[in-house]
Amino acid sequence: MKPASHNASAAARFSHGARRCASDRLLKPATALPLSERCFRDLCQNARRELPALARNLGPLAGEILALRDALLASLRRYSGFEDDLARLVPGDFLAATPAEWLPHLPRYLRAMQIRAERAALNPAKDAEKAKPLAPLAALQKNLPPEKRATYRWLLEEFRVSIFAQELGTAQPVSVKRLERYAEEN
Image (tube, rainbow, N blue to C red; front, side, top):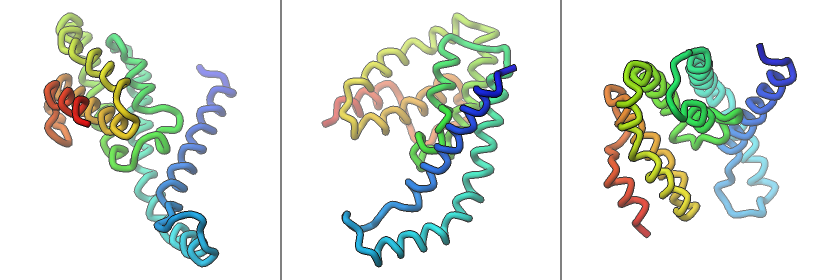
């Protein structure tokens, strides 16, 4: 059992991430800064109007993501790098850390982790063989310019799905060659 201070800290990180997610999505000014008073008021009015819909959409998704994370944490089946994968996909502030366009994909990535863990338990050597291309591809990410790094990171998550849980499908075609090509493009 985790200490109460850890649970409070995790809840605080989640709450902070949810607030940051809401402000990032709702308070993005369409005009250049500094804002006029009228533009600011319009922005706040739009945010008040859109917040309930955002909460209705994000609430169930966040619940699904947290349930999958908890199931993975409770599972005894693990593979090499399991904890790193889970921490990368669902940090305490995942709602803010995950770009809006990729957030709906997190449940699929977590299901892919479940499938990988189950298969790795049956055949660790095969899992290790499938994982070989990941290290050099992850290393490429570190050398990318910041504006390309985020997209590459999510393409790499799609690649993980394609090699460990093909039956879940990918959001777009991805392969070693495509990732290398993306990393080489200027």
